[in-house]
Length: 496
Image (tube, rainbow, N blue to C red; front, side, top):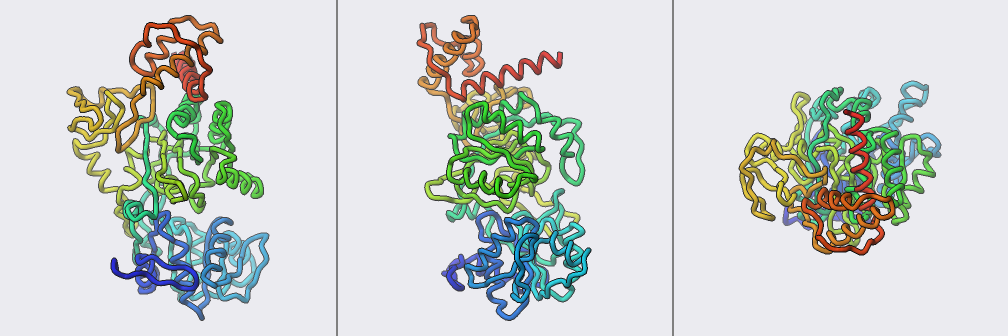
């Protein structure tokens, strides 16, 4: 397969692995195509549909954006599909129909309309296939070839989808797509895991109401913004929140820090949503916070920073969220993931290979992360410089090797640190800028001189130089860091 130069159908040239996946999928009655972000899931589906020149095809998706994207991609292959979607005109004579699951359910299962004919039924984002609506529609096509498409072929709890599909057909995994230039590498920064003790689990993930109550707090929200200012390089950013309220609070804190930010949720009108996403794409907005809207089926390659403010036990959800920022774009060399959820320590790095399974009693896992967690080679934070080191080995950045137990070590001030690479040390110039900014704040707010020294030591671990400093206006990062510290202090007082 490696020597196959690929082939083209219509105006689109397939990559060699895409040609292989198409051929392999057509050998099975119910294949599940595993296509990570950037591997060309819709291109693969379009090729299969384009080959079936005299067959009826039904392409199912659960979101308006996915349906219209699929119709557009098919047109690039010379296949002009009808659309079955509320508010859109129908063309029932076309052999290919792209349909909303909800619209078909309402019109043809609960209503009296006839289902469209289909020899092939495609199910986009097929990890949702166990829902009753999908199962009822699939059962309506007993003689059709059923083809699933997803980047994460598992339920929310990680179990396989073998009850619906009979074969996994896999595209290259994320690390291979990065190697070949089809995705960009991710730089991951993460703190210690958030305190989720007592948060219950339902359906394989945290109960969202309890999760929101635990993480939707001013001090934690302040930390999200402060770390973004410190690490994100003001890149276009998507922020994943636990609830609508949490997303709004994050948006408000970003705006308070001088960041151009907007919020999206399921109730945001489509014109407003399109305007916000377009503004993020072209840089008029720096960050969009959302709750369960931009998790899947949303492509904006220009966005290169992902903030995980939503803890999850679901490997699939974690990979879906991170995958939003891995697509390449002109001038984009990497992506930044700011993990405030601790997901990287549970599910591994975004490029770790995953062992997927169809077995309903088997859960998808990162074998690499399992091995890390079972051994003394787990990823740890260097307490000397903040870099991530391998357990039992000296830090690759500073050479430090602690003699005390790792669990006795505490992180400094909740700062995010680079996972999988050395953290950046503060330069003398940066320290001088912070010293001048802290002096400016103390002068304006009437703080005693000792406040400057203690905040400097809190930030850098050492006392400031004993010399007069000319005050300088603080950056948004400095102000956000000070505000986050004040919120933590107030919360400590409240907790007694």
